[in-house]
Length: 535
Ligand code: AMP
Ligand code: MG
Image (cartoon, rainbow, N blue to C red; front, side, top):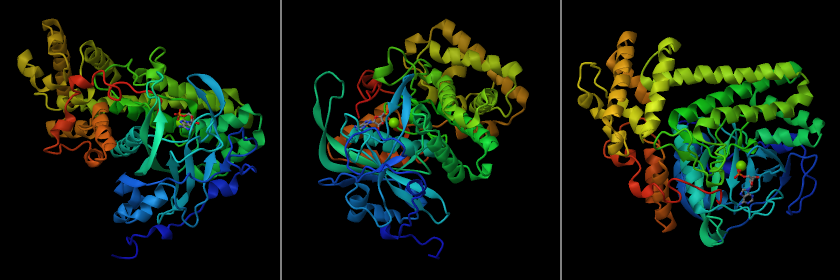
């Protein structure tokens, strides 16, 4: 092992806590709930836990920190990442931010159950903030307990790693640790609270700054601090844009628009529904952040949301995510206005979102269909008709696109032979009426002609498709089965899913059961098709 690849011990981690060094701290140090003005964060210690026990860890994230992954199984690791022991160089704090929740300004929110331990500088010179989620109350906990239950922690841990391996920008998760303590939750908000096992996830990201971090300062008229935070963010996370100035502020906002657009294209590609796209849950880096009542589209339905608290309005439904991101960027633009003071320029910057999304979406659609170039003349109609077909009968989105690569490219085939590779994608075979099959085959034949006209070879088409159409995603019921086991003290399934989802685009012989469509029992079971915010 040479010097470059030598793994380090926990106590060798190097911390450089820029956020707290360069931005103003809340002068108050007692841990009582309060409004925090004139500061970006409050120092607070993680709550000690009784009997921490490791459930799972991500070896890739350990490696990102230059840690030897075998270390993650040690008692010392468990003590540190449950919040029981601070390493030298750690200086823990909770961040102050606000946000629009479901379209309404909510004022100060902040890290109510997240505590940042510090910023590790890895061998590449990257700053990576370590953040414990579920490690007790902070000044921002409002009326809640600062804790997280095992079920929601399993979901956050597995999904953030799964998203990373799918190629979706996301915060990461290093570890998932049981606290050995119970947390009381009324899962259905129906007056039946029960004790559930508590857990802590260590999240890792270059920064956890949110749209709402800026919004709160502007809402309070604290423009000095707004400028400080913007300048800090540009210098640390967007240094390529140059020294902060009026021009750079705009270029930076444009870049946020661009990154956000790219992230949303990825969500639409893989069928991810965030569930709570409040502005406090929007990362300034364009990362998927705050995995709560999210879900994966099973049958393709743009109106679907997994979040039970949003079923009436369906504000955050799958098909609405692109518009909501735009709306959220509009709120960020409002917050930045005092520094830029040019409405038109801000509006033009928002056009960057629309243009980036449009372009990214076309590229994504072509790749999902195995085409190299999107030709609006043919492909607008081709894709529109496909999306109608997918939602007319219950069709598993993931399976459909994956199996479409196996289509026999012969327009002369009978309808029956043509649709054979796709049959697994259908939830209700009786819905496949003769009329539907006719319409589907009409589409399949125009698709075949389009592919043939493009001149693309079969092997290449399959390669393009299989690189963007995952075989394995964190199906809602799979996560729930792993949770059921974990709650009984058996973490095998959590770890099996973690392993499986490291290679979502590979066939993985022997693992096909994980690629099957949702079983019938999961249709209505809580956790499998719908989720509450109670976590
Ligand atoms: P969310 O939309 O779930 O990301 O959270 C909205 C706000 O509520 C954030 O400020 C969270 O920190 C806070 N929050 C959520 N759950 C808890 C909890 N159990 N204890 C304290 N604060 C919480
Ligand atoms: Mg949040």
